[in-house]
Length: 121
Image (tube, rainbow, N blue to C red; front, top):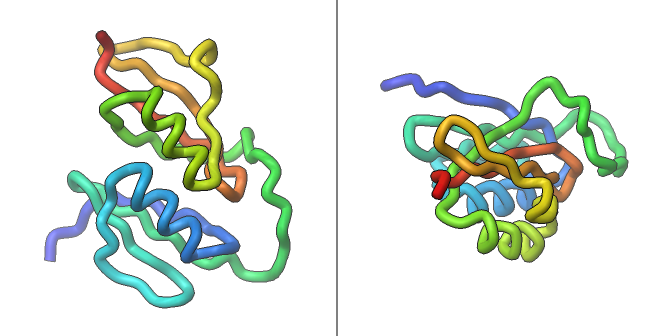
C-alpha cells in the first residue's frame, strides 16, 4: 500500500462536509463510515472526521493553523458551485495572483477557510 500526503479535517457533519469537498475539489471517496470519510485526488488524501463533542458554532475560522488549497479550472464557476454546496468563495476583488496561479480564499459550510487556485492567464 502506498501512503499519500494527507490532512485530517475535524467537522460536525461528516456527510455534508464530505459532499462539499468531494464535489468542489473533484475528490473520490475511497473509504469511510458514519464517523469519517477518506477522500482522494491527485496523490493527496483528505480525511473528514467527526469532531468529538457537540456544538454548532460555524463562524469563519480565519486563524486556523491549516488551510486546504485545491486546484480548479475556473474560479468564477467554482464560486457558484461553492455557494450551491453551502460554502462561500470570497468575491473576485479579493482574488490574487502569484507563482503562475490565480487564487481566492473562501469558507466551507462549517467555517473552515480554504483556497482555490487556477492557472494564471
